[in-house]
Length: 258
Image 1 (cartoon, helix red, strand yellow):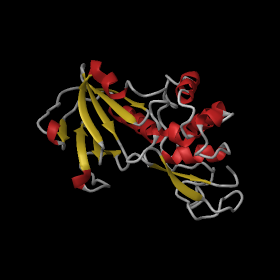
Image 2: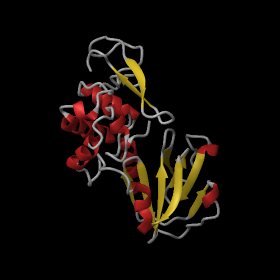
Image 3: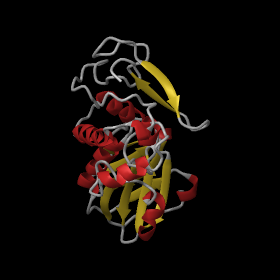
Image 4: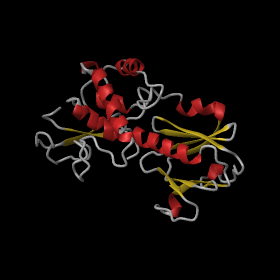
């Protein structure tokens, strides 16, 4: 599942492969950009903000994409086969050496460089970014003390980069029930420290793990393990929903460890 670590890892790969190269072909397979032609423009930096990816193109444009639940960016050598179906491709960018393909992207838009804030300015401090400021994140979280901590961590306006998986896993590691109101979480700074540590550790991994074990079924403590025994105490893992109607998000926890 694409979360902050996945997007930062993607940005690094795109940056290493494409920065400084000139587009020899481009194909936007979304209606609003279907006629756009960026051939001849140089590709600049690729950076992540939370779960958003910003790819600078030319002197004045930025390609803003969001992976949502199923999206991914792949790099291929020209002429090689794609690993995902052709109909899932939303963006194809080509240079002499690489073909970058964005599959099943939830958001694809081309922005003026000076309008990037319109796409990501609402985000809180990025757990993996140079703007990370735990005090700002704590202030934003504590501004709504009655909100369940699991829900608050998912609100990208508070801090950017945590999705369902890391919300559940980090709270397990901190021994905190996701339904606990933010104002009652005594060691909230520890939750943020652990979140940053876990995401940082996974940026360099091809397979996400919070247990340190990469064996199938052993990589995560509680996420998507409802009904299974806790890997630590053998209590049955539970699942539930957090958030307002229509915007509910799943969470998982161990009733004993948390």
